Image (cartoon, rainbow, N blue to C red; front, side, top):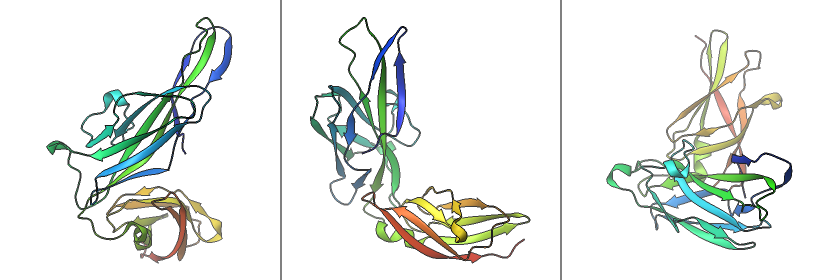
Length: 245
């Protein structure tokens, strides 16, 4: 259940009453649409707040667009209209891959988009009372896996290739993902518990992470990655070292 960003705050002038907060939650931490099956995924949401809430759902291609600006995204949502959820009520949304000719996603690798839920609390009953209201936007990764890709996502993280590269006084850790799947790194740790920034590595992609020149050359790396169920897995790999130049 994730609330990742507050995208709107409406503030009226005067003395404020307690803020009206949204309370809709999403079951799960990611959405996976399998092109080899029904090309559809179901997402369950529930209003756990203390008042009815209006929700709006959409998919964006990674630029954080708002619903009114969405264009050329190959997914259709049902139900598509805004919904008011009563307290304790739930709603299941279906996200279906149904592209127009100009919206086809690659067939040789997994694609990453984002599922958005905007949760807007109701206006106060007393129109004369100044109120601080927040609209909460939840945003989950949405992975589309075409039928044609090879391999298994559970094995992709173990295929990562780690190399220490040096140029003058600079050095960095190069991480190559030869698989057809996105790999979401939760943490990357060198010897002496040195933590490096973690990120998502695209299919067939390369990530370069700078390392302090004073850091001892790593020979192994311990990293954690997130699987299809949102669980954190840990793995260790050897680090190859290229000659400095």
